[in-house]
Image (cartoon, rainbow, N blue to C red; front, side, top):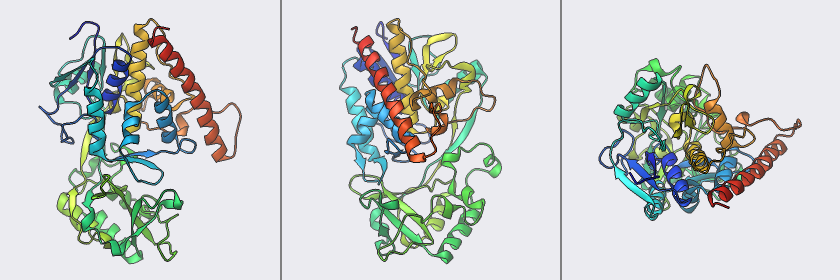
Length: 440
């Protein structure tokens, strides 16, 4: 490895974000990725930064959604992931959804265009001793996962799931209508309405369908944000109508609100494939075909990819990480991404960005990036490093933020005030970091 270089292990969202941040600030990087020599059970694309579970990076609303605010914080900090998402987005109402293949290609080409990144294709089997950011993800290979378990005594995990994707040409458009919930967008979603009888038949089939993984994981090991649709359905016959299939804010061409609605979101710019929004599943493949085909618009659907579930590993971070994502007792070795206990694409990338800035600042003899709870990026870092006897993955939400200085009852105003406070702080953080790293 080049003298003075930083090893970034893993070229997922967190690793790519970290490598790009370090490289653009003049720090040489060795980016280690085991693809395409070896793939995890969930990966298949040879490009870096592959999206697996969804093509959506959730809300883009800066002043009304915590994840939207986090994206804007990252834009201010020069995020490659958000730049790529903005450049490859597909219509999705108020959400930032991307053409996942164009997204991965954009990131890969951007990184390969930098002279001070050396690319190494190999499986990392041991923890680096210094000057490294480990971002191998929740599907960390067995050899490295084994060492981490032995070193830190952690065997924490949860299950994650992905939704099916269907061919656009196979959707019965006569049984759909185009609309965005509450009119937020330009008709970016295809909506598949169901009447009461159709909905109840669908729910009944979901609940009784055969699953891949035994039911003993259901109560404790599934992250709520990616809960399989069949488990949600089993909680009560109307659960889905108040969840991912809720008809609220959606009206067909006759101005009628359906009993229940499945929304389909474009998977690519061409609109040749659609994702079944919120339908992460653990059903066996033939069962997915049978059950989802009960939805009238999907009666003859061609499944381009079936939903899958896989086990994800994360560290007991409060016991081993400092608030800048560095390892206690080895403060030039950092962890980043979903394995730290942040949950979600954007959150994973944000942790890589924060870790890279902290490492770069430390090299200049300066204090690392602050885990400022008034910002989403800082609050997530504080979450994964604060003592917690029941530590679980966390995504961006207003609950992790430090309360406002005064009580505000109006919810919309409160969210705006959170955002205004946060963005002012992040701009100051970015200005300071850029000045230090430029040697000014």
